[in-house]
Amino acid sequence: MYKKTVKILLSTAASLLVFVASIGVSPNSMWILYEPDIPRSLKK
Amino acid sequence: MIRTVSRNMAEKLGKQLQCDEERVEVFAYGLQIILGTGFKLVLILLISLILDTFHTTLVCLITYIAFRNFGGGVHLTTYSRCLVTGLAVFAVLGKLAVHDMKTNILSLLLIATSLLWIYAITKWVPAGTEKKQVTDRYIRLKQKQKTGWVLMLWVIACTASISYRLTQHAFASLLGAFEALFLISPWGYSTAKALDNLLDNLGKGGARECIKRQ
Figure 1 (cartoon, chains in turn red, purple):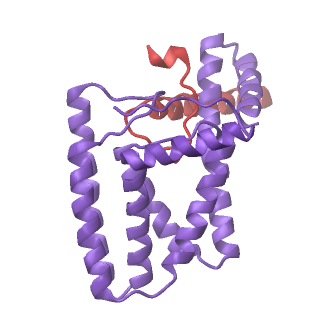
Figure 2: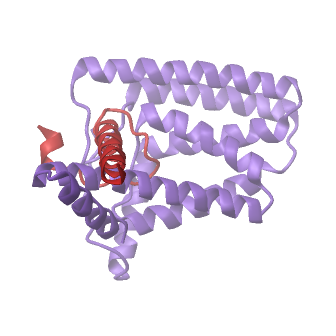
Figure 3: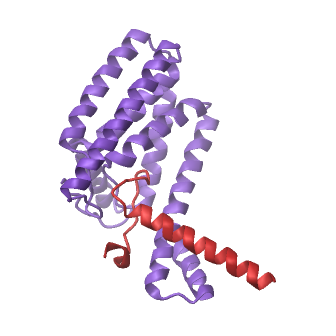
């Protein structure tokens, strides 16, 4: 049960990070002042 | 530091979920954005609380983000530089906005800033950096339209604030819009470049990247 919950939470966190990353490469410049290097896989 | 922490966290997450290297890079990028932005926002608001300028700083920040989101603009080359500059700029603007301004002066400033923004939208928006440039004509046009909508809503909000004598909020919003405008203009790019050069020469921070105008 515990492992299953952790797995769900981690998957949700991963999805959120992918979502944020996709916003990061969009034309909008949402992130004030600093922009990190865009990963190669997202530049494709 | 943010980069290292993000990378470590992303690697742990990738290991747990058995993801490949490309996916871990995406996680690290997402984490850098969340941690970097969150840390900066919290610090800006914390300083504003200490300086007793929370409301004006918040209004200034919201206006700045609204314009910046669609209009783009210059970025400094390292996180620490951005953090310090961002904190200093918003602390000063928040403090400046506390001063009471006459409504007729605010109205004049509103007209002047709006006209400058119209010029900026036609000429510079979306202003990119070396890391991210919008070259597609259609997307550029869309960004100009979106920035135009932001400008229109902002003019309405500012006019209402001035009418209801919320002079501090109106002034804070004007300052936020002006800051965003400055950072998409060639002068903003020159200033950021000069700042990066100066810090490079002083040996503080990472290697300078050439920021090109579109």
